[in-house]
Image 1 (tube, rainbow, N blue to C red):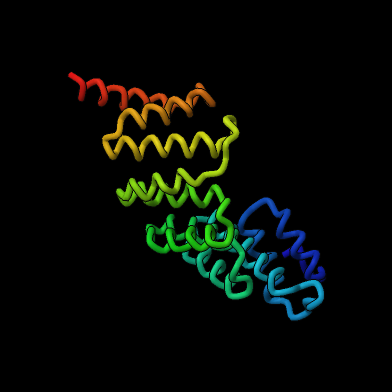
Image 2 (image 1 turned 135 degrees about the vertical axis):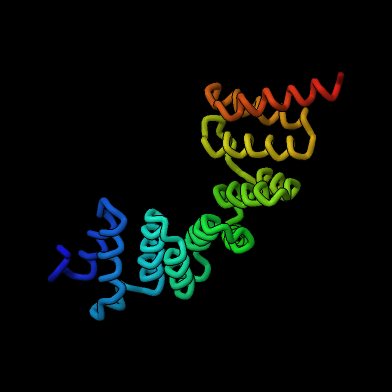
Length: 205
């Protein structure tokens, strides 16, 4: 490793700017293993950040079990950090542990109710589980209102899909139309709109 002889702060810097996830893990692990961390610089929150960044790197390598372990270690040091709970939720979703994912996203939102990505991801998990009413509640809570914001279009598209599953085709069409008004090239919304219109037309014949 190139970090031999480097200070802990330099190792963290090298991990932060490393190009590849495995390099990040190597540098961050050296930080965590170091016995020479200045307590004035390395608070529990700072060390929790190193664990979190290590977990994200493991996620990039699709090693989600190790990522979850890292996030849990980070939460032991910084329990009320919404970003750690959010990333833990992502890792759980990738291993198919949807209930744990919901718990993690819920913790994120208890700490920061305006964490839009957590609302969206929690809604997506409810969609996967067929719990469409709960998914709609999540999408309703997305705070983003800028029409060119990707969060806005993702939330409205997912909201439309949930309405479609509940056979509420007019509401679904309204959602997909909002998406296309913001982003006319959103192919998924185009397809979803056509499907909902077909269903609505079929119900009226």
